[in-house]
Length: 215
Image (cartoon, rainbow, N blue to C red):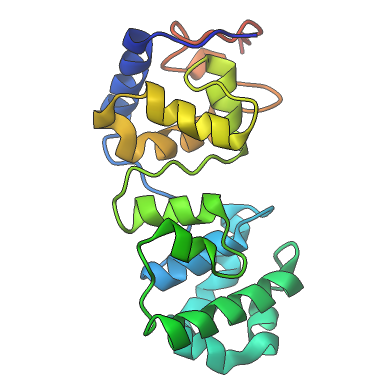
């Protein structure tokens, strides 16, 4: 198993990521904090492309908690039925919209605890919203980051919480804000699960992964 990389190597990795893509962006479409919460909640066990297709029309008619509640569970379901687990997700979106409208004056809270109290919003979703919308250095660890962190030695951990802490402990502060986007994009398009594209990897010489591919 790869060992934890040293500070200098990790710093160089993220320096290269920043040189290659100074302002990485998330790939979920949204128009405000509320639609970001909804999009990320819908993305569990689904692709960003699939979520974007489903929310394209939904967000045109329901970009606030009140408008989403007005659609009702059935109306929301009709829009998200192409997404996995759509029935439960539609119920969650309806309920979280109700709570935001009734208890938060339709303003998305900037507290992790408050976000996690919403139906369908877990730690990962909360961290994405805190990072992307509120510009906090929160680390949303998904399967791509978990794989990347352990495979390369950048952030090793037995579970997502341990990897999240390793990111906070080992990645220099100047890279913390964009760290999770760089890692997600690298894991999604280069450091793939089954067949990583090591020949196209800009950090290949620093990575501790032993089973590197040549194609």
